[in-house]
Length: 351
Picture (cartoon, rainbow, N blue to C red):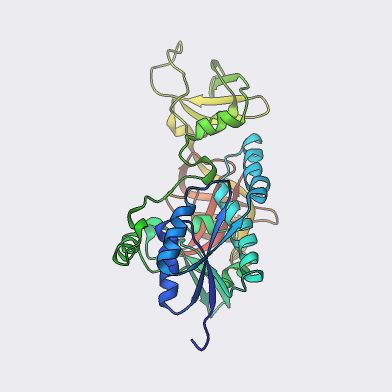
């Protein structure tokens, strides 16, 4: 490099972002760490401070509690209230980490790029003259699912140093350079539900609204529940249904919900959860446009879900997706992500 490029690395305190910063330092970048707090007294702050000090990196702090509360947390609650089951990390990445944080890094810290410890690959395609988001070397930790809503401008300013490295290799490097977080457990929780069970989180924020469990085929009322909001598609545990006259002792599954009537539809036939198609809205195409109005690709509907071949038909506002085989528990509010081999085409919200 003729002159050092400045990179602001989002340092969470975990081993991934710490090694992302280390690898950039090794490549000759000027690195500034940025720790962002979504709530008060974040216990991860001490880990970020230790990692930054060890690496000799200046650590800045960015508090976004007001923004987070309004644009992420309250939005999440509102989506739940409307009957959806959203993935808040997708929205947080789009509007905060690669929105407000990116703007802060560029304007306030004069950064050329921002970087994170996500396991994704971001490359320039010379043929299409577009940035492509693709699956990284560590396919087991692929996080394209959470970044499918980013655009070309955001990708042009973002580096992902872990694209060609695996998690075990990250931990090995961290140990070799003496980082104390080399064995620190990776968090898979939503930050504002961290350490708590999701059902307990719901009970803290929503009042009980008694309604009926309804057997989906016979429309027979077979029990009562505390509110449709407390149940999700495919749920089997904690339904409290048993000993129903004229039904076997087989387990029950939530197969549908009606928020207008506050009914939760259940069945002992798990196959009722299998659906061959879905409709999605708020679609983001990473290239700016879909490949065509009708095309074949692969898709998945949850982070750790199976990638399944499908046919996609695009209209102005929505997409229709028909899968090669039925998928279990397609859930409104969750995301469907499209792939062309290893390249993430984009995705949207299941309705």
